Amino acid sequence: MLNGDRLLDAAVRELAEVGPAAFTLAGAADRAGASAATYIKRFGSRHGVFLALNRRWADGVIIGIESAVATRHGIDRVREAVLWGVPEMDVAAHAANNLAVFALDLTHSDMRAILGEGWMAQHQKVTELLTEVMSDGLLATAPEPDQAARMLIALVEGTRIAWCVHPEGSLERLIRSHVDALLGTWK
Image 1 (cartoon, rainbow, N blue to C red):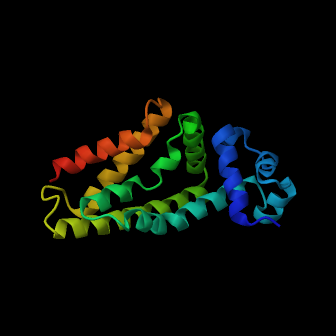
Image 2 (cartoon, rainbow, N blue to C red; image 1 turned 60 degrees about the horizontal axis):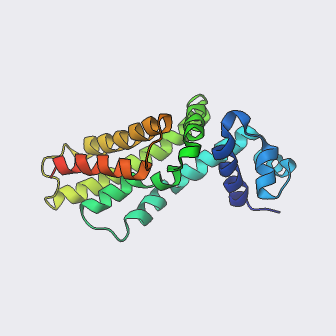
């Protein structure tokens, strides 16, 4: 039997390629080398797959951010924390589908709740990193860490949405330049 991560990885690839409207368990199963029945047995339904994908993302936020910042110092830790996950989205051919998946998530209260957990975890971790950086005397003109974290996350998410609508160049480079510009004003 295939493990859950392999099934979810195949579902992510299928969603990126075809979007949530055309997503089928059979399509994901073909990518995983499994059957649609395997997905049904493991996740119960298409909606169950989407819930599992959101849960996996939310559960991985803190670990992912900590890994991204582990070898960084000072302001670089903040930058890499807010950029965590962006490189995986930097595929113009999949941009509209990624945005469509997000829109679908927002239409279901259970999926939206899980996204909320992940974003709260991200906000908490970025706030902690900003608090550390500010206590070291860096980012002297930044607002309070909580507000600064909200501003940085909003900048990243807003840029991601705009890029999905009109994907030109590299999403990661674009977001990195916007984050650096904002952090630069706070030095």
